[in-house]
Amino acid sequence: MTNKELNLYTTGKREVCIANDTISDVLFKEYGVNRGLRDINGKGVLAGLTRISKIVSFKEVDGVKTPCDGELWYRGYKVNTLIDELSHDEFGFEKTAYLLLFGQKPTPDEEEEFCRILGKCKKLPVNFTRNVIMEGPSKDIMNSMTKSILTLASYDREVNSATLESCIRQCMELIAVFPMLAVYGYHAYNHYMNDASMYIHRPKPELSTAENILRMLRPDRSYTKLEAKVLDIVLMLHMEHGGGNNSTFTTRVVTSSGSDTYSSIAAAMSSLKGPKHGGANIKVMEMMEDIRQHVTDKTDRDEVRAYLSRIIDGDAFDGKGLIYGMGHAVYSVSDPRERILKSYVQKLADAKHQEENITLYNIIEEEAPKLIAQKRHIFKGVSPNVDFYSGFVYEMLGIPVELYTPLFAIARIVGWSAHRIEEMIGMNKIIRPAYMSVMDELE
Image (cartoon, rainbow, N blue to C red; front, side, top):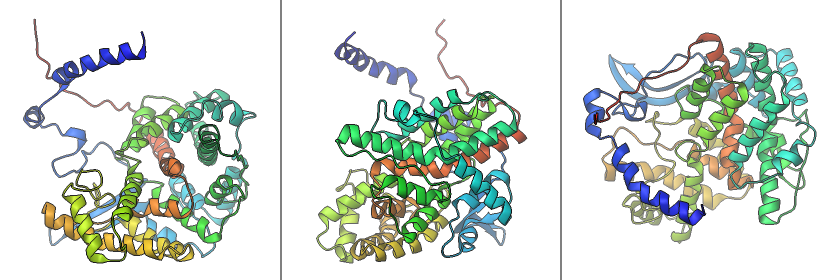
C-alpha cells in the first residue's frame, strides 16, 4: 500500500475513532474519576509515597490551607540551601546527584570517589558513536537518545539482572553518558541534515557535567567559568520534581513491572519529550521571539503590556491566549526554581551584554501576572515558572533549540534513577490502576 492510499484510509477512519472513543465529562463526574489523575483544582491523585523530594505550595495558617512561596526539597534539604552552600567556583550537579541517589549528603571522600567513578563512566562502547548515533541521525534528539539508550542495553551482560547493585551501576553509567548521547546526537544531525561541520569532542573525566556539555558542544571547546556555573545551576534545578510528574511516574510504572533499567529510562524519555511535559521552554522562546518582532521598544513597559494583552486575548502569537512561562500546575505564589535561577540569569545577561533582553523579561514577569488576573479572573496567584528563564539561559549559552529538552533529560535522569531505586526497594508490587468500562453492551 502506498502512503497516499494509507493516508486516505486513516483519514476516513478519523471520525469513526472520535465517535467510538469519546467519553463525556458527565460519565467522569458520575463515577468520580479524575481526568489525568488530577482533581478539579489540578491536584494530583495520591498514587504513592516517596522520600526523594517534596514540593510545597501551601501551608496551614490558623487552620486554613494558605498559598505560600513555593519550596522544593531534595532528601530533606531545600534546593536553594544546597545551591547556597556551594562556593563561588564549586559545581553542584554531581554532589546533588549523590544526595538524590543515596539519600544522604556525601562526605568529601565520598564525593571524590563518586565523581571519580562517574568520570570513568564517561565513555561509550567502541564505535558506538559511529555505528549507532551517527547512523540514521534525527532532528528529534530525544528520539536519537532513546535509540542509543536501548542499544546500550545490548552491551550490558547484566541487562536483566534484578539486583540493586546492577541497577545502581546502570543508572550511574547512564547519568555519565547522557551528555554524550545528547551532544553527539545533535552534531550528527547538524552535520548530515544541515551540512555543518562535525565535532566529536571527548569529555574530560575530571570536569563537571556542565563543563563537559559546553566543551563537547562548542567547536573550540572553550567556555567561561560563569557559563558553566549557570548551566550547573539549571541542571540542579531540573534534577528532580516529585514522583507525580509524568516521566518520573512512567519510570516507576515500568520499574514496577520488573523491566530493566534501560527500558525504564527509555520510557521516561518518551514521556519527557511530549510537548505538554518537557518542551515548555521552547514555547517560551518562540513567544519571546514573536514579542521582539512586534514590539518596537522592548524597554517600553506600556508597549510591551499592550502586546501581552493581545496575546491573552488570542489576537497575537499562536492565538491560544496563553503567556508561556507563567503559572504552574503546583506552585501558585512562586516557583522556587525560577527565583533561584533569576539571579544567575542576571549575571549571565550582564556578561553577555543582554541588557535590553533582560529588561524585556523583567517587564513581562511583572506585567503578565497582573494582566492574567485581570482578564482571566484568576486571583489565586500566577507567577513565572522555571521555564520562563531556562530557555533564555540556553540561548545566551549558544545552545541550539534542538538540545533544550535533552538538557532537561540530562538533569532529570538523576531523579528518574533515584525513583527507580526507591521503587525497587520499597514497593515490590506492580502498579496496576483500575479503569471502569463504560462501553455499550450490544448483544
